[in-house]
Length: 353
Ligand SMILES: NC(=O)c1ccc[n+]([C@@H]2O[C@H](COP(=O)([O-])OP(=O)(O)OC[C@H]3O[C@@H](n4cnc5c(N)ncnc54)[C@H](OP(=O)(O)O)[C@@H]3O)[C@@H](O)[C@H]2O)c1
Image (cartoon, rainbow, N blue to C red; front, side, top):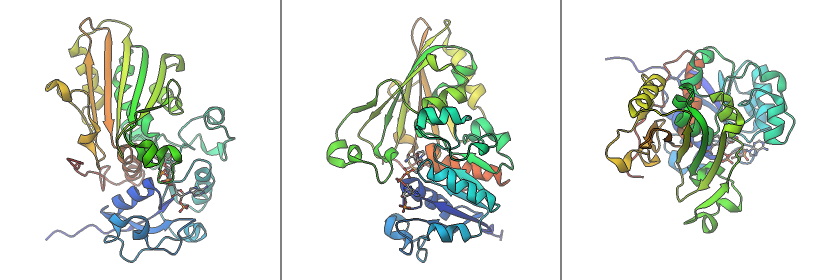
């Protein structure tokens, strides 16, 4: 009989009462090597983890949240920060000083320059000296830099969706301009979102949250290597709890055939375990639907090309809490720790959900 792997890598989760924190707890519960050393919360220290996350009560029957002070004293090899930006960078600095590796899901280490951070997040960066070493948290783009890294950022969930939709076309040098539309679920705003996330306001609405400019554009242009002027990005809140559908309307700088686009997609995503492309038929499923990735770390990409070959819909679908947050974070942490990349995050989507 083969032996089960030992859960021998202690990890802490900060912001563990939130949605991304809860998703990290769910993943770690079934991770073959990582074990929960501490679920950190300012507001709920001493209360059971199952009180904030009833779906996890049975997997953490004896675990309670611990205070940030205790969190700093808890030995861990990897800390996952699911905190708001700014609070994250300050915590990251202290944890790195104590010898832990950090994956920070907030926006604090996604951008490469403190000036860009000030522009988009309206605050001086709390730890600009760490920006140089932070690796952007998409393994599909930065796998090699992640090996052995101390500090890995998270991804903006809309940014991740846009990057998966556009990267092959950007690498092909085809983008004249792109209009990125993300249709997003309410969990994107976190467990403590404002009035806009409350059910009576949010439910059944189709609210265009940002028509032209979204913060995540900074990550998208950084990672795609595109000039800012070539992209506009809007986000529409739709009737979903989880999930993002991203459809980018791309004006191409030359006419192409479908076969050219397939080739670019295969070059970008061929061999990527979590990324697949929807087939051309049936036509109504060609533009990916987040329904088919719910609860998983999977990405669906897809496209449709105009008859004259100069206009493209480049699309993707992800679960914002998984590939757009906790799933990518654990996948990245696996690489940083020298583990097999898919450990703990290779779950099958839930359908229908
Ligand atoms: N939701 C998504 O789809 C998503 C996707 C990608 C990235 N992210 C990023 O992940 C992080 C967490 O997002 P979330 O959606 O999980 O938010 P959330 O549900 O609001 O949870 C954040 C948690 O952080 C703690 N917290 C709040 N303010 C704090 C402060 N000033 N200092 C220390 N702790 C504080 C809170 O726990 P206590 O009060 O109990 O300490 C809260 O439960 C954010 O940076 C977000 O940008 C989220």
